[in-house]
Image (cartoon, rainbow, N blue to C red; front, side, top):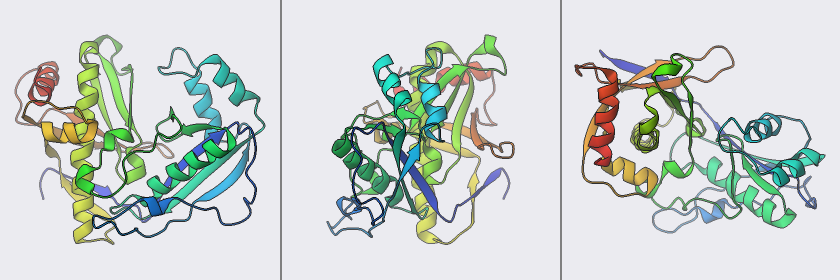
Length: 299
């Protein structure tokens, strides 16, 4: 098939959360931890398959917490920790890491189980809840909506869109990339040379595109659950309904086409789906970046 991309489908997906600087350690970690997957209900209200989380004590300075703390503590790197929280995390000798695994199809029980277990531990221990996949400091009792209906699943609740100067051409815009989409088995999205005044709108555009891609991903796996690869069209239509589903914000009806390019990362580094103008678009890419915000967000 012409103008397509081939994406690998992981056999198992991993979701991690960290409960940092617990004020008291829970007992019985050697035993099977009690998960919270029973809160994830099917459309008819029946409990879904239970996924047992793994909880372990990690020492200070161990990944993934160490690098994330330095990033969130950097005043020049975007969202950061307040000094008191940063000092508490840095002075703690031990933390708790919660992990859960599950397959790549709907529902994403690994993500749900990991976050609900980590939240319960944060409440019980007085710890600080970190999402190292985003990376973000999460408020306790943050957990997104239950997994009753995939059509009401809001991927924007699980993603962080980072914004920084585009090192490919700092004078021409910003680099924007998602963090957290990989936990659902898809490459992260990135946009380059985004005008600074469009970054807020482009956050919604990228979230809407992530919603579109994730729905198609789960639909394909419904048809062929055990597949190792998916072939997708490089040109994708995103609608304002996709943006609404991802973000919970309402916009006038609209749609726009984007082109995706798979940029494999170097060994040990993530791959990205780079968001580009469609091949049929004629004109400067900067104009398209403004037009897609207007088409999807109505402004």
